[in-house]
Image (cartoon, rainbow, N blue to C red):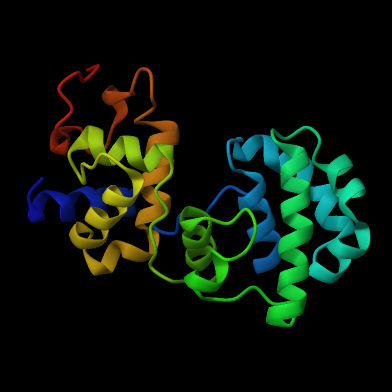
Length: 210
């Protein structure tokens, strides 16, 4: 895509959804962090079924540690990998208490030191909780970036690196959500809904369905 195409690409997504929101339920930066950790290899929908009751019981690191690993496990047992995720939630909560006064740090290096938190999770938290223009490359963004020709790359890190370069600054804050939502509902994996795609004419995908 040319610079002009990329600007038009995001202009159209912005026009359709000026203030895109993430779909994981949360009440504060801490519950967002926990929700994103729980969403690894799971759907947002599945996570959202389990977390309201969990967050009602514990919406701070202190409350989560007091709740304990066994009870956390009971709350999230419908989510994949719940055993390791329960351990991570308790472990990261302890670190937040001991090293960060119970607060979620607005710093990627500090976030990726937490159990269960990788670069993608850190970028989601920095973007949604702290308004930083980060781009977390999940399976949807990876697919859309490669399929459309927006930012092709063989690994999520390469795609992120390219997106950082090509996305115009005016769109960087919300680019993450626009691309995820586009991949989740329009540019889907098996049969993309090209007939209803707002960026159809800008897309380089050779196997369009319309």
